[in-house]
Image (cartoon, rainbow, N blue to C red; front, side):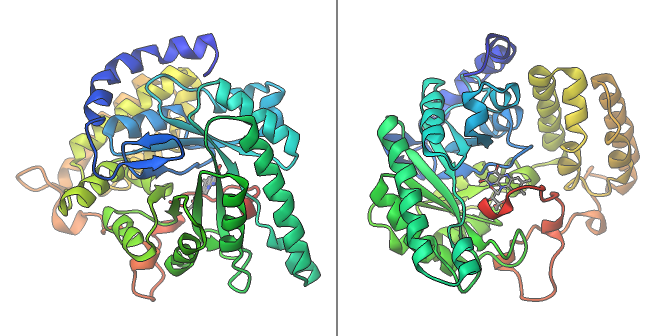
Length: 400
Ligand SMILES: Cc1cc2nc3c(=O)[nH]c(=O)nc-3n(C[C@H](O)[C@H](O)[C@H](O)COP(=O)(O)O)c2cc1C
């Protein structure tokens, strides 16, 4: 996938990773079948528009533990029209495998043709960003519209399934609101239409990105389908949260979005927890800095120094959230324009940070960041602020 230029640009990344990829193939526990695919882990990277680009996917893959990564949402028509932005979104490299591309669109022929393009470009599966069918029902107050909508959606999916050999999957929310939890019906209808797996974000449209993820709602979707895997999603920001989602929903896999941005090590640590019962410690400061620098290098490799550094302004503060005191870093990094400038900002921050360390070089207890706690693992009150940091995008949140 990707044009010649991007393929060349990404080449060095590939060779550095080949040994690690071979090693990771030996992992068997936590592996899963996914349509015709055998994934080495049942942990997935969720699509996060603007974030889950090639550099970030490579960072996550290098650390390990992830079974399948998905691109940002791609508009089916734009892909068919070879819109440069759409092509950049599906840019990949051999080390960026296995990869799913997520498509968005409502015209069946366009979704079908875009799926064919995605398959030809080497993706191992195609995911559909699924609209919430109940909106219409809520507006007109009847049930028949929902069935019509379900039939239409199933027909669109069938057209895609018949056109490609790779698995077609669907990602949806629980429904419009708590009184309209349509996901179980939709999941069953989509299974009949041939989807290979369902990704379910355990919130309703009305909840947006706040409130508690509804594990019982995810469990209902798991119970509704006959044979296909259901992958739970929402608010998994720690290995123990992933384990709780597995345990309480019976889901076959867990998909992680923002949690991976807080903590790209989450897949590796979760897989380890699931395999051994042992919770690995959080990565050290030095390890965080190593991966941060690797991420920046990849951003520059894929997007060029100017754009890569500008894009990194919103990425670096994710890493620093677990650095302890970090305002000295954040206030400067949001203006970074070159790699040399970044190196200088980091070096001066590391000097400044020393005042918060003990004799062993560890953060003094009072400066250590609080543990990450998922919505469904918190006491009901008070509302935590941990989920407020990734700006929720303007756009069709009802379909996410
Ligand atoms: C910044 C941002 C971008 C997102 N982009 C997409 C997207 O392109 N496609 C999609 O299906 N969901 C998208 N989502 C939803 C996530 O994939 C995921 O379902 C949701 O954030 C809950 O999971 P999490 O708590 O692990 O992040 C996005 C969410 C955020 C916060």
